[in-house]
Image (cartoon, rainbow, N blue to C red; front, side, top):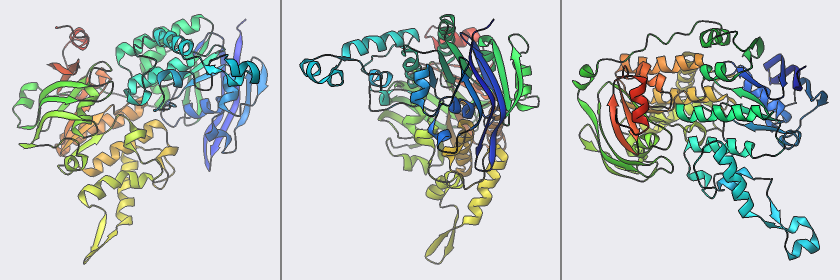
Length: 526
């Protein structure tokens, strides 16, 4: 007989007039990996936020249904209560304090102390922080997930991928842990890092800790899962046992239709290299913490889709961030023959060079503004679009803004209550679509896109990648795409530059072998 750890029965949840969960059942045994899959907006994160007692659930009227923990009915009303039960959660959006060190984040609210003269008189609460032991235990947690970073490193200075590992280390460090929820843990990781993490999850479950795994990487889901729960539009579609389906069948269940990426393919390199060079990057150095570019030299041709790939920490993300003026940079970047200024984002944007950041919440979105404003603001600021002139006066053209926002919502399939809703209320995938929409409305000649499908379900991924290809093919927009998803780069790019140790290691064709990509990404000449 299985040792049932968790049961969620007939779980329902409404936000306003929108019913996001419609009687969902879930059962989890000790030491089991249960994967939760579905498109963005299917209700996966909401279901887990209910389990973890997140304020966004508690403060909006709670939920319907019943949760049983080891056979006993529980009403989890806060993350602290969830943690007392032994439930940990690695959230899709980071729950870290940037100004704190790795150790301080891992040990937050679980600090270790040692006695001193005052604590012996006034009690343990007056003890001295035991930094040595906390650093030691943090180091052990980091080693389990193969993250070679010092416990004293400030989290705010780290790359997005490294921050994800710190989130995971924090949960692994908890001594009473019985269940860990992983909400898109590999979304920001490279293939190699994902492999490490999956091996770690197998070790965790072998020790009796259960795992709920949420991911849009269906091959990972198939490999890891003992059972798979499929949600669609807030409803339970299917519960599958190991071996019952493959990635294609799972995708069909998730989206209710077949999803085909086969129509995307790059053009011959010879054709691309005949086109004029629109951007020349020479000896670009970018001081981005955790992702330094040391000497990047490459030409970007008009109308191409150029990909940047590489392992986390090798510098691929620094290239676009340096050109955008977000981090100290040196070297030379020429656009249409003119030298671009470093550290001046406005001047770069005025050249009709657009950017979609890998950090959608930190940089990409204005979370307290409407979706409409998020989509239109850049075009308003840089191109003076969405204004009507009356002599010397200008007035915002609200009608045009709404029409444009509604068009983008429809074309990109953004699941929202309307253009006046704030993006903070959207799922991660729909937030990313808003970022893409803003870049499209800005109408750049060159568009740098970093991790465009991080945390995106397979249906939305198809929409976004198709949209970028259409932007390139129909409007002639030059696209530079940085991604940890090598498969995606190979399906849509004309050329792919491998970044290693902050430099361009090689420029490959999408059709080059997996072995060649793998060796070069590891720094080995192929």
